[in-house]
Amino acid sequence: MHREHLGWRTGRAIVLTLFLAFAIFPLYWIIITSLKGQKEIFSLPIQYWPEQVTLINYLEIFQISHFQVYIWNSFLVSLVASAMVVFISMLGGYVLARFSFQGKRQVMFGFLVTQMIPMFIGMAPLYMMMSKMHILNSLFSLMLIYTVMLIPFCTIIMSGFFQRIPNALEEAAMMDGCSRLSALFRVIVPIMLPGIAATFIFAFVQCWNELIMAVLFIDEESVKTIPVAMNAFIKKYDIEWGAMSAATVLSVIPTMLLFAFCQKYLVEGLTQGAVKG
Amino acid sequence: MDTQKPIVMTTKQVVPEGKKSFQISKEGRFIFLCLLPALLFVSVFTYYPLVRGIIMSFQNYTLFDLMNIQFIGLDNFVNVLTSPDFPRVAMNSFYWVFFSLVFQLLFGFMLALLMRKKFRGRGIYQAFVFFPWAMSGFLIGLIWRWMFNAQFGVINDLLLKTGLIDAPISFLADGAWAMAAVIIANIWYGVAFFAIMILAALQSIPEELYEAAAMDGAGRIQQFWRVTLPYIMPTMLVTILLRVIWILNFPDIIYAMTNGAPAGSTHIFATYMIDKVIFGQDYGQASAVGVIIVLILMLFTIFYVKATKVEKGGDF
Image (cartoon, rainbow over the protein chains, first blue to last red):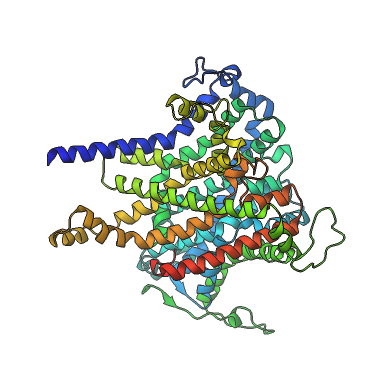
């Protein structure tokens, strides 16, 4: 009995380790590549550990391609868009969770449908709209479109969070003379902070990672976000793998950090908000 | 929900016809104002372009000839459907969704089952195993493109070292291999999502169900079939439906890895459509591809919901 137990546990540990290896090896490999010199990257046999660790690839992307500008642009767009998304979807989610009113089902359905249709079917019309609004090649266009893209899903998630908080809390506050809005912000929001944080991080990561709209709307060097800049790397040179690896590592770091710190809330929030078992 | 207050708000109350003085209940106005930003944004920047896109699919809308735009009926659809690329793109889309889904589900399920019981360092383990899910498809494509490199790629090196192959394979230069390669990258990305959803469902199974099953003499395997699987089925079915939609609409990995190369042999509908917009500048045909995607998804969803009665799984 005891031996069987041990065998079971060992088998489990082995499979778990294999999954871990599968998950992290690509990241390991891109980090290793980014630390190799040009010669070593293109030399055989392949080195699984750089003979000489060098930061030359990192220096190169900052000096030649102004990577700091792209990082800042991505950061700014993601920050503003996520803040707007959180604010707008909090109001919407609150109302959807607390009231029943005519047209509520239609609103919910309308939000759900946006998850089913490919955003890029409206790609060309969007491009023309942005052009008419004279905001092509601006960070504002991305802030706007990312906000729009994330509102439906985040509103649904937020409404899930609100449903778990008893109504009695804000009713008590309203008895004490708070308006509904101030009850919401002073009583409910503090309780919901983990959920709000999860939604914010989800939105931030989505914005940080988005490529297609950014490539479509942005062309000018000074407003490029990281994916757009990297997309241009591919086109311009026949991929300089050293620089590309360094750029990849740098652009992964913020999402990795956010994810590592908050994955517990994120996973919790997304699963509870997304599927009510 | 018993906590909800029933409030009736009709359109008439919100948009009074011609009357200056109107009475909306305080709550009605609050509801309207709270929903207004979300509805406004989504209507203007999602629904309007969507409708325009659908209209465009019936027009000869190309950037080369903007002066001469008119309705051309089903010509775009005919052109897309009869183009020599189409059968390949359709097959690729099918492989892309089918194999990605099957392996993501399989691995995700295994991972969730293995992670269910607490073990030391589970939190950290979870962070490492789930992180691909937080990465951008574009970067994932780049990383795997480098790993699949014919000459300096680590995958060839590993395969050669383990003796599975004798000569390096040009993964991304050979159509069939390239399709397999992009799917592998997508599996790597999507395992975490299934694992997360299934793990959450597993952890919500009440322990009493197992106790009752054990009392009835059910063994480990029987418990799995009789308790675990039925309990998590609704979550699985909803997750599968969502994933099919998302995978079909997810061009980023392919865009970065091959962008349809070699010779269009890794295009799926989504990348094919982007190709038509960015390189072909043919908005009419691109929109037709988009409409075809939506039609396929609608048919699939209807069929799937009917076949599995997934609506019982709760709306997400």
